[in-house]
Image 1 (cartoon, protein in one colour):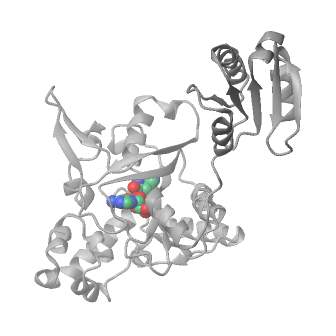
Image 2 (cartoon, protein in one colour):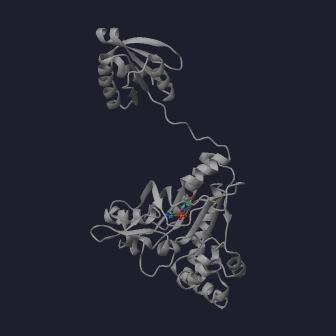
Image 3 (tube, rainbow, N blue to C red):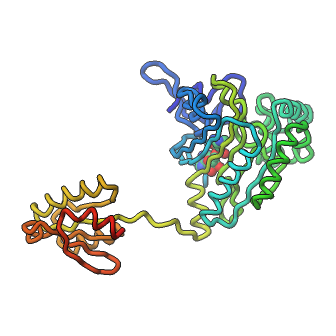
Length: 377
Ligand code: HAM
């Protein structure tokens, strides 16, 4: 939850800002919004906590739910999870290439095949403004023919008409001027450096001259990681991002350029499923305690705490299940070791330590458990 003005700023016309958020008043009559994306809130926090004063470069990541009041459809939900990164402090194109490389590595690391990286540049403020004007002048004569949404966008944010999916808009924008044609020298140089670095790093990408993205804080590079997988559906952007050199100052901080991206987790999972990629299994448990009565549970409880203090993961079943059921549970947790404690063990101050893969079992003094696990794991 954020104050609404983090997302709803004056003079802005991006669709998300004007209509796609959940807004309400709290009991103190404050205007609040469920965050529709991560970036603006991260920047709000960056300013509030004066992170800009700590280092020249700040690199952040986040994972969490977001909310957009959109028409739900395949791949588009009103609540969805994103993970993303933001890097702030320089407009050096090396950072752009680094951030893009990280986005690409996310996809490559997951083993997804049918994925393309699309890039484009909107240029610096001057280039973007010149382009906006050219596009507006080009579209104005077609105003009445544009879709209803695009007629509104024409006045507020004509760039968004470029990525409209409505057939009439697509037809009209077929020969529209393109952002790359309006880059000034500085913007062109920056974009060329990025593509050179991507080439050097052997990161495959495709130029998409009409890519403008749905949020309007971007300038310079914008990019999207799209699924080109059969059966994926039309909402095929797995992730997207770009540079935003004015956002920090627009939100009240010192002028600080930044760049970042976010991936939608539901869409990523869908892509993984269609391509038949399995995610790495859940991490396994170091030790699972098998106990038989109150006394053995007491000892197990103490030892479990000790293991956790030393950084081992461990678990213990509190119900009085029989040995077989406890064993089954331990294997479900993929426990590496069983610590088996019965009445005799309690009396003798020992525990049985069983390696679940080799089935080897040893009896050790209870005080030795931590060191023994350190040795074996
Ligand atoms: P975005 O393109 O709006 O960018 O969202 C990023 C990703 O979130 C999308 O590619 C998609 O996978 C997922 N996503 C968005 N809306 C939905 C939805 N309704 N249902 C399911 N998944 C969805 C941003 O949010 C920017 N903050 C990215 C960024 C970070 N730019 C700079 N830094």
